[in-house]
Length: 90
Image (cartoon, rainbow, N blue to C red):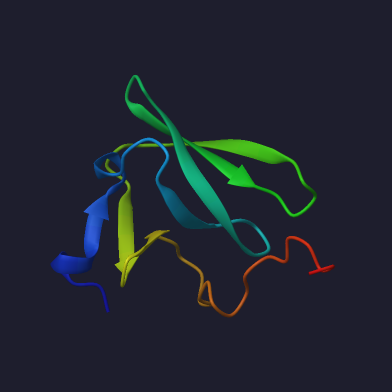
């Protein structure tokens, strides 16, 4: 359950902040790369080794799970259950 204490806005994170985001299939790491004219640009790491950008509204809610910021989502799974594998060699 989200309380007002563990909900913050995306624009409160500084450039370089890390957060967890939900992709179509799994959860991935992202970083705030730029605050641009009414948008926050996130760079998301892909398991294939590439990265891509997401643009979100600065008013988008971020859920804090302890000290881990998570972009609010509508899925039923949690990031701990379905986190993307980046490199299976390790």
